[in-house]
Image 1 (cartoon, rainbow, N blue to C red):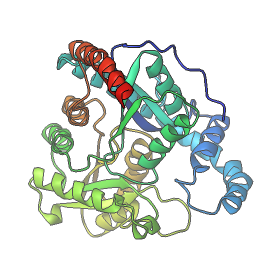
Image 2 (cartoon, one colour):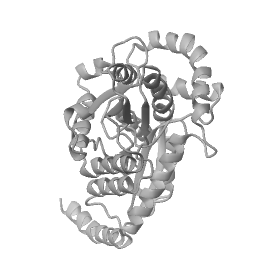
Image 3 (spheres, rainbow, N blue to C red):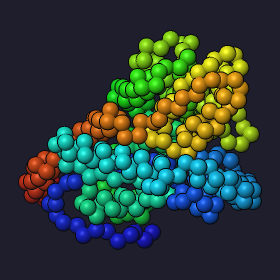
Image 4 (spheres, rainbow, N blue to C red):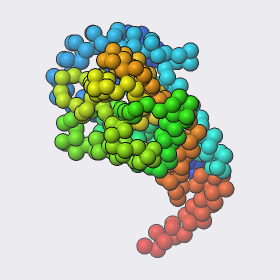
Length: 366
């Protein structure tokens, strides 16, 4: 195996700590060619679609990538901003907010963001951090609830990069934070602000991204973690069981996915006489195609067409200050024991220098 060229190694160099904030990804532009490239990478991952590769390759390249890119491009175009893809914009702002909050708390921590699919890739951002001297890297996925379809591919990308690397940095991985107090408080703050400014609807629908039901049967904890988030958030908001509902969106293909499905639930609520709903997407930390187009546009149309009178989409956490603070706290808890200030890094380096001769002499005696 040929290893890639390493950054120059300097004995005794100060240990640098970094956080890499990882999101799913986005096409570089809302066009069919860009969507075809993005979807080929995304849907080509066996973590995302668990169908035998030879069969799925024929379906993906023979049907899906011939039809879906143009349809998806039109949807992306409807939510694209002057700054670019909302998902990339919010991920970038969250990473900047995290870096600023680290600095405000007295930490010297490098922060970058990366995408599992598309650019900037996880592999390229790890390399960039190493060139800046990072020797310890904490991976923070943008997914509060763990799933083998989203969180695990982040780890896969790190492992693939590691197979080509001689001098590996230390890594730590955050699996989930679906029940973290700061995350729940940030969600509650976002919803309460919306209610203060716009009033409160009859029902709060918490829509999470769906996954095939089969993943639950095979041991994926995602379903249970979504429901725990929903319960904790409802408790924080002092909602009774009949005042909120957890649903799952973004079904793809003919297989059975986690239920209840979001859009049919919205239709059923309207038909049963519910005149107003608030919809929030707790599993998405930043607004994207699935929240802005699928929920705020398509979900709204379905509810109103079925007889509803008022549909209110509550934005994701995005750069909500309470969320930036929670992100930082979550990272702090996982960074314990690693030097995160210049003084601590220098002391750590000095300690290693003083220990090294002793270790060598002990080895010589053996």
